[in-house]
Image (cartoon, rainbow, N blue to C red; front, side):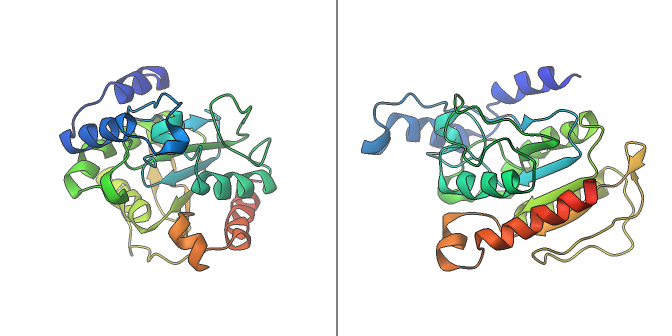
Length: 230
């Protein structure tokens, strides 16, 4: 399967009735500031440089962010925070992510997510994660140059570890979620060394508004990633 074929499957997916209902309901009932826009309201593919050495793994699209614009981390505050850090670390050509037409290009980085549809209250169920993780597994097969994975949030971190185990990676000790930690995992994945794993707090508004995650803290994470990929 090629990446194009995988993305076609992702966009047409309707495996999770609750997520399908929510993404379409949100599109049909937008807040006043977005009533003039036509929502994407379908699952989201990953995007970025297919030769990327950095993989950025998020949780799921935001109801009025990616679900509206059709691109992950685009059109909401999480995307603003993330792309600023990617830009400052040299992984993006600009520091904003507002729409498909904004000119954003990622260099040596690819952004994807555990779940491809916007979940109610940003909380996918375990069954929804299981349905969707096969797409992430296939992306890891197709993105052959990945050396570092930044996992944004505990669920992305945990799901990634579980996926490595399912793919046959033998971990002597499971890493513990700690913002900014660097885990050099032993073993191979699809014939290549397992990517270095860096967990980070998710750049959600809840985390940034409370100061749990600052722009500087996220900048440091991606500066570490830059140092590791070279």
